[in-house]
Image: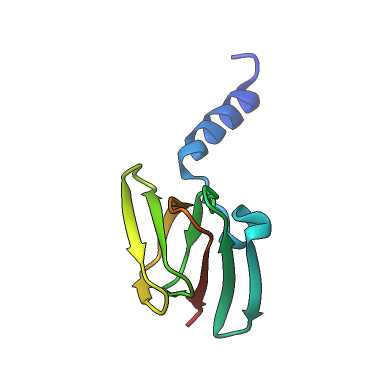
Length: 120
């Protein structure tokens, strides 16, 4: 083999393609996300999602609470490609274990939420 090092690198990189970690919500949601608190215990992200906006595929590495500040309907697609539609009312609070997903505002009005990521 003329280029064993190049071949080894190509094989190693090909094996990583499926395991690349999803990005952070504060990055993938762009200007729709704002980190409003970040300390040793929690990180709080305020999401302001216009109609049709998507958070982009992202990963929550820890448990989290989601506080719905407005009513809304979302279509959430998991890492496995399965989608589900969620309808929430202002004031609802949801618990979520670590997950990777993308969330799309599938409703007819903007949606505001607070995502509270627990660090401990």
